[in-house]
Image 1 (cartoon, one colour):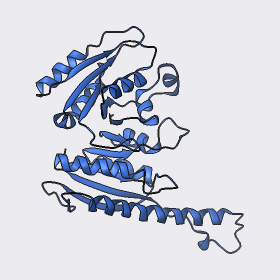
Image 2 (cartoon, helix red, strand yellow; image 1 turned 90 degrees about the vertical axis):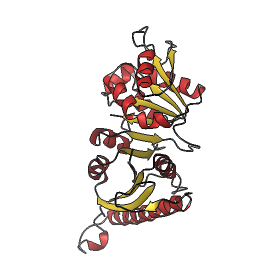
Image 3 (cartoon, one colour; image 1 turned 45 degrees about the vertical axis):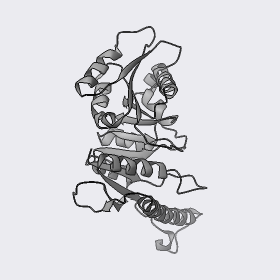
Image 4 (cartoon, one colour; image 1 turned 135 degrees about the vertical axis):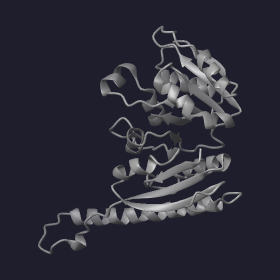
Length: 293
């Protein structure tokens, strides 16, 4: 784990603009310090709208001009918030990271801004990082996932750490690995190895769905043992819950601070019938989640 990306897109609590993305920054810097890695903070700024000041004088406005001017004003506020957040988190670090863009051993950091369409910029930026860290949003989106999470999972192909609001303490000391025997959960466990090597406790959880009990958590425990990791297993019996809530409830009972799972984007019909663990941990964030597409 050598490069950690924290993209800032300006999602925030209107009453406290510096609050929400602060948790992603804190987690990103903490992990960079523990891994001896570089944390890259990128402020993604939407391309400025066509201000009403540039419109022909004969153009009928009807309030649209005021709206565009307000969007420009808020975009500038978001840009300033991102700079302030970065400066605040850097000044709070002990030891201080070396601020550089060049590959350098140890704990380093840098800040940059990119202007354009956020969803277009996300993929190329994220693909060149080992880990992406973002804060869970409070917004109730009309789509299954927040736009930021969805585009990262679809376009980046890299592990994504989603940090819940009001997250406190170190992430990754007590780790839950969600195992269902699938290729996605196998990829997730392999991608999580850097985290697991730093963990004090590891628990592999499986959930018996609709009476099915053909997945043995001991198989994943044995796989981790080949990597020198001591993990225990826990099988969750069918308790009338879908796997997402069942595994998260069990992980929190074990005081886990991170859950590792293979991320999947399912059709609406699939989600209505079977549920989606990825959607559950993102939309109802109660624990930090490492999502691996």
